[in-house]
Length: 240
Image (tube, rainbow, N blue to C red):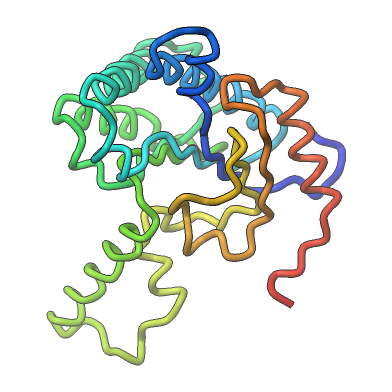
């Protein structure tokens, strides 16, 4: 638990650098995703230990789903399915030890049906946990999230359930994948790139942004604690 009371309530993480990490080790690029998922489990544990209530992890973008080689995507899907299996069958898994409510956000209907079923099983198995919350962004795109929210609102309008003057930020927020959750206080991107890459564009307007050259599998607990300290040292202005 961090001593300073200014601990972020919600952290978003862009898990970048898996492929480059694997190449560094002279492995096939997609092998990095295996280590990336292992690191995600560690980071979730550090976050829970530190009193972070919400964590959103950007695992697979919608663009990646369309452009990455089939073999790489199958590798990712297999490891996501294995991790879901572990959650469902290991009572001492970090998800259960810290009572983490898991939500998969994105256009998950585009994933293989077998994987979809596993992910839904995990959501059902953790739906009563309220201590911590994990959003796994998979087949996710921030612009597409907004489009999906607007479609829901348009359907309500067509049914006469919504008037144009009723539309505001709060109503749109209720129709996002992250409905019911606070906006991220901080977003961390690993891997050296300085951009958000379509990650939570609506929710991140006042998020503190942190970038590190370290690739995702290289992140240590000391690094993670350093991100929190950096956040605590910043003065947030919220657009003022």
